[in-house]
Image (cartoon, rainbow, N blue to C red; front, side, top):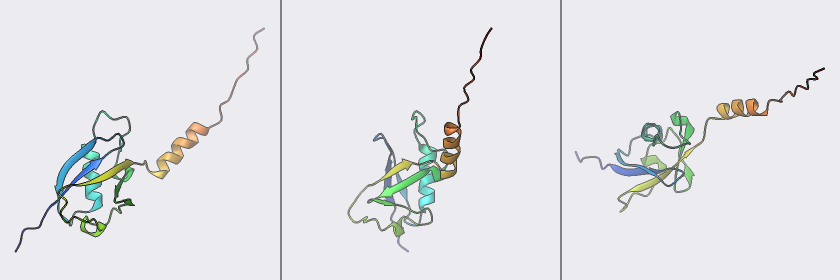
Length: 115
């Protein structure tokens, strides 16, 4: 039985820094890739994902779905030695809404008169 050919991927973050490269099986899921990105995210960055769902992986202009495998993402591997995906931090919608409500809470001004 022939050995499965591994695919070499690296992940580019917002400031041009790369995470990787790493080798993955074509049967690896996008969720697995996201877990790796979160665990290897540079600790000195201001913007960082807390969980895998905070990360969106983009390849060839398409946002990849968690349940898809690397081979299902229709990436053309062909002669390429290394594939670069973009990793974008996008906090979950629930977290963003909660933070927005706190930030938009009306500020009460208190006018005090001293006699």
